[in-house]
Length: 105
Image 1 (cartoon, rainbow, N blue to C red):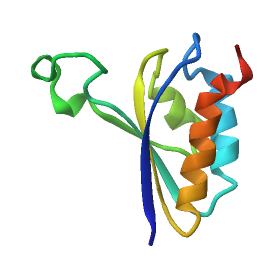
Image 2: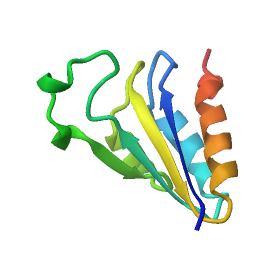
Image 3: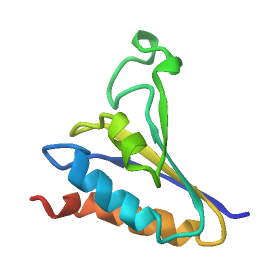
């Protein structure tokens, strides 16, 4: 099974609130691959000694409730992971959604 991952940084000012989370889930559900979104245990630029790894949060990318639980604000680093036949396309299109700032700005 192909496995693809990509790190992205939330760049829209309001972060991953309900509307963009729903956009992400709607797109994720168009793919057969299993999609997981991991919130980095250590924020970009932070000292890794100051934040333990158990702070990492994983979410099913096809569940809006789990995506919202990530509480990903502007600047948060997320890792999109997909495993399945369409994993590469799924990660590319989901990352493009983040790059577009969910059409908010």
